[in-house]
Amino acid sequence: MTLADAPLAVTMGDPCGIGPEIVARMFVRRPDRRHWIVVGDPGVMAAALRAVDGQAQVRVIGEPGEVEIGNGALPVLASSRLATLPPVGQVSAAGGQAAYDAIVAAIDLAKRGRVRGIVTAPINKAALSAAGIRYPGHTEMLADHAGGCTVAMMLANEEIRTVLVTIHCSLADAIRRADFAAQMSALRLAQAAGVALGIPHPRIAVAGLNPHAGEDGLFGDEEIRIIRPAIEAARAEGIDASGPWPGDTVFMQARKGRFDIVVAQYHDQGLIPVKYMGIEKGVNVTLGLPFVRTSPDHGTAFDIAGRGLADPTSIETAFDYAMRMRVPTPAG
Image (cartoon, helix red, strand yellow):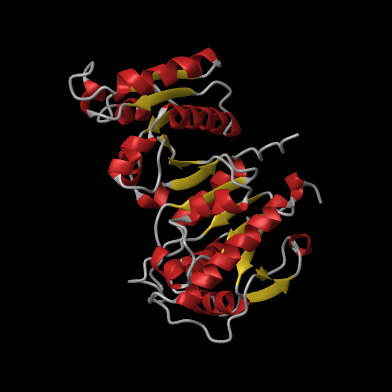
């Protein structure tokens, strides 16, 4: 089995949230797009399938190559086997551990070339913490287990793509961390993301850190000292970067088609514009990994878990986005 023929791996997410349900719904709703496996707990996924479609079955597999196109069963590679299913809609250490085990198993498959990429269902940070797992989110977990990669988060829909210079940290920390090296890393990863999406020469706009992009130093000088020199250095490398642009207008310009990707300085600056356009349309992409990884743009939604209300549109969008992306070429 070549990497191009390999299935995608979809992790089940936190078993106490809506992850298993949206994965099950995606399986039932899209019989024409079933070249994928679930990495997770067979009991959790069997319960989710029963709630969605009483006729659908789980088939436990040992390797991704055992997937049969057209087979009516949901292929699950067991990363855990819970003796008792944790309560739905509640933070659970068992749920956090099972979610983590699924992610680690999927990363191992991707590193070995057994799957062409990973689509991750939502996890819960409190559940991870209850299980003694100290990661602030998927991004850091993926980077660590993939070999300490330098990564960035890209949130995207059909109109806007934004790459973050800093991710999960306080705003005060983000200002400190948005140094020249972080700017260059984000710019290079944004360039690679554009190419992976079939844009040979992506137009990359860089948002300023301060209001009005600093107004020539009137509202802060990070644009002059750090961001502008990074843009000039990136242009010297052949990257079509421009800015720094005011953060309150650059996304509007991108939506109008002027830019392909916006590099944002901190989490909320980059994510609010995309999420405002509809969470069900947003996709989270981790850049810099040796494999493709996407996820839906929402959380575990404990408040509606187990009630049959979860909408799988976002994970379906994440799946389709992963299929569109070129698999990174292994180093060496």
